Length: 446
Ligand code: NDP
Image (cartoon, rainbow, N blue to C red; front, side, top):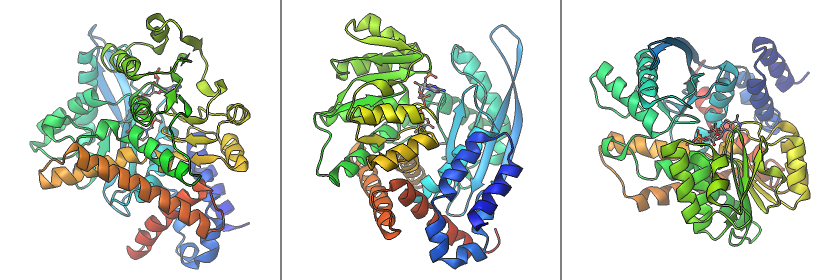
């Protein structure tokens, strides 16, 4: 048996009942064969055995009191996966599905993603099975305060810098930061995604969505194409989806869908700036369901419990959650002529779907490359905090643009170098892996 299969067998044995984690590890390891064949040093130093094991996993109780005075107990997590190339860095997710498997998959992906950004950041992920939906601001605040009352001892500006993810936006980051500051009595850049008045960076809210679109532009350039006039489907209606739509609009694309966990809206006339502003208010202020869109915009249709992948489009931007594109969804997209998929979400396409996209040789940008703009600007927020300076919007956006171009170049060229031209999955995994693996070699048995 070759070394990759041996490591995968151990991972399976050690992490039973963790399908998302196994999926992510399998997807990465199975693309690393050519690197191991070319560079014996990684095999000799057993880098694969080490890189699949998180450096540290923290699980903790989060007790809090709801508005009725009842005691509630949630589970908190922080998976500090790798600090080979910088302090641990990665988001916090608050969603009822959160468990060790999901956070380990996200932490593992984060290691390679952060390596691709060109910045010095290790990989981590954390969160809770707490569901902010339907909770009052006070309940969310009490939960965040209790969560940070344990987490604060494990994080810090030079140690581990969490950010947002599903269910954790500006409101939650504010409550978490406030509690950290009280406990530590210091004002440091311990979290990113902060408010602009207290250490946040311009363009951080926009970064993941904008970055995904910049990455799509880079992919299109290789075929002398642009986004102008392209029909695009977008899933999700949260942070990533909203700013993906905003940037697509600026570039002249037509966006026809959005979704949430209850269903999909299809607007054949296209979602324009005014409709997007309405969605942002619905999701960020009123915190309502996307189904309400058809009451406001009567020509649109709502499909309960459906994802947007049956809608005809040129380009698809999955921006909701993992495994939201199945093999059948991928087939439907391809049958309808979709020729570009840019993953704003993490691991949104299941293994069968990935295989279909690769076999069809469409422009396919895997999440760890395409959505790296979010963590890249988080890295820029850390740099600004360290200097106690704030850059202009243009400066941050330019840097984001340059980073996304560099990530595409690195994935594209690495794929060519390893004889898999156009395969950005292999390119991203190999390029991300080598930087971390080389750092591990330099640092001894860690
Ligand atoms: P938000 O919480 O802002 O939005 C998430 C959106 O996805 C919501 O519309 C939500 O619907 C929907 N969604 C969540 N879970 C499911 C589900 N199980 N099935 C269907 N729809 C679902 O999160 P973000 O926009 O920040 O994150 C979206 C994706 O992008 C995630 O995969 C995240 O890991 C990834 N990502 C985010 C980054 C960031 O900077 N924020 C950076 C890189 C990646 P509902 O409201 O009904 O739950």
